[in-house]
Image (cartoon, rainbow, N blue to C red):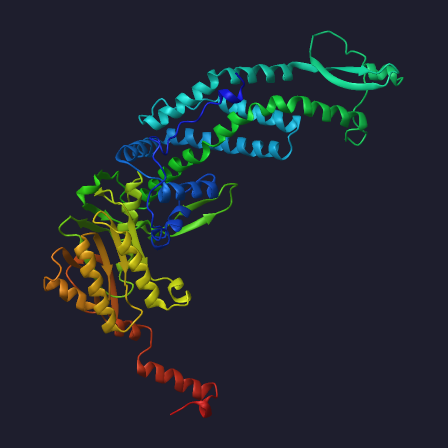
Length: 537
């Protein structure tokens, strides 16, 4: 059996039960929930590659209750034990260095790069990670895998090969000559063992070219190989690279372990940092799809943390340095018979942040990660469907309102009673009256569909319809604020009930855009900047 055929596959620690990649079909939540921004705050060692891998896991990997428990157990090990994190970080660093050596060998497959690659692989496998304290199946499988690599026949052969090379005096060659004495071809005989006390052999090439010294230099005075040296070097490359290449498949398999390990330790350190910033972080309990409920206590949106990218090291990571204790926590709760929420309140009061928090906690929990909350118990959903107004809605060429309705039509076609739907101020691209009528039609549809729905709006008639009992499963929520001393004071606290004002006029006053403010600004331009003759009465 060849070494390639003996390749030991690394354990699948992210998708341990071999689930197909058929997760959420609708991907709009990736942008609407600012998933890329969140992942940019996770301190992955291999930043870009690991971030892409994490996106793939969160967006496309299917997940089951067994998979959730498997992933959570690994995270729990790493979060609770600093030594385990150090060990895995060291392993990731070694894999990263080995991947660099592998790339160098692929770009220039010669003996020098090949030996550097093999020695790097040998050193990495010789340093078996100490994961004895790990309770999770995932980290135990990592330890078992490394031990299997060390015990493998191919690794024993690698040890012997490198030991012979390191202890060899050189390489004996055989040159085949034609009858007229000209060299026909050359082959490497064997590695010449270094024997203590023996004198160097006088190479045949020295005798033929009449040199008196014991050995012929293969380099110019400047250090570069001379013609003879280049010939021998190229020949040795051809002789040894097939041997080196026979180990490449196993080395590639080992380096492919980098992103899965980085996925876990990156998120573990991220959740630890959230706790250091006074965020609650919990291990969620996942319920079956048909439970159709969510109960989360003191949830915070991690996107409210300020992050600063630090490039002072060779690896990219984000350093959280924010006001975690000032981020207001809120509860989230729905059941199968109370699962529609109309959320009102002023601009910048926290409506959008709240519904984004709902979506992020569902996503992180359902994918086997921890949640930024004191506690969380929630059922799986078959899809997260979102629509947040974006510049794209305006630039598609059909108008914002038509694009909004087109998107909501897609959601209606795909959502089921087991889905989560989040709509942030829809139907705002038309008149207020038409927007209200269309919004009520949408709410009628989602209410009939019985899907969990979060609907933010400034259309207060919708809240009145909820109060009137039009939607049996609906409840009004509002973001609390007060107006004192001509200023809006935001509490960012979400409470039950409706809010009858959006404070649009007060915000205009605060920014100096009331009619009298505008008149004063225009008059000033006339007086000071000389536009008086051009201005209209």
